Image 1: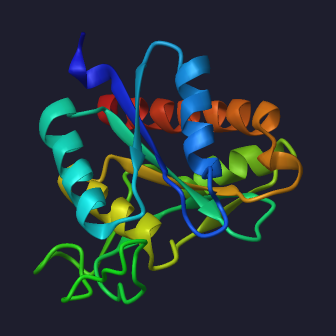
Image 2: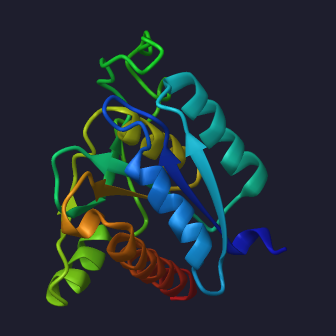
Length: 198
């Protein structure tokens, strides 16, 4: 297997009212439908700073994917949100274990913010023109999704993406959400290929 052609997709575990997290359900759906020529490797991230840090670091150290796509759930949202940036600091909310990083940061001494090599605004516009409920964002929320995203951007030379999936409503239904995510990720991968050959 050519490790350069692996795409890692993560979703989160149980969290508050989400006994089965929609982001993990979506990740498993993507494993089932695939991403064309790319091998899909899925991993569930516990809503834990310590465990998420261990898993993300290990993914980039051992699997070395072409791209890591992290799925999170946007509570109360009915749209798909494409996140551009991950923040290093301001992590003050406790995780499911009641833990919060003492430094409130992901990486001591790391840049304040990192942006994905994927132009998420361009990806969002493409789907918006097709009438899909997709929005672009530069604020990933300052909790575990943002934390995981920053770590992945840091360890993977910014070859990561964070997509917040809806918590309910029309686009959240698996038969609609998974094909949409499949198309969004394939668009991001094509953009990544183009930038590397340009």
